[in-house]
Image 1: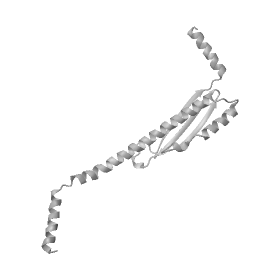
Image 2: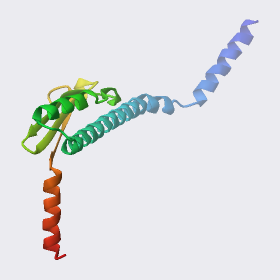
Image 3: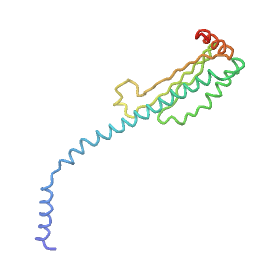
Length: 163
């Protein structure tokens, strides 16, 4: 290739580059990281909300189970409750870990408490708390009722309704 031919190729490539503007490159360099960060933040918030809803559902289901389970005495109730809490499938929680899971039987009141926490991936962006952890808790309670008490309440309701 001759020197004249090589120079003309470089000149032609330079002319093509001058005709194109570079606005898209600058805009992409500024906007793309912000868009990606916003998408990751939204995904992380959705995972947090999903796990919070699972915790609420599990605590409500266990509390309802505790109100309806048949137990002969407090020790039998405690044994059945510990078995039920041990059967809770914890691997379904996607982004966090369970930090508290307890059941309390106080007289006829069955109460279940659960808590979980999520470690935020970027500590500098966590403006809601000084720690790098987001947490939530769920607390449900139901009154246990014997069948005899239920029948008595039904009779009282019938009397009140005028039947």
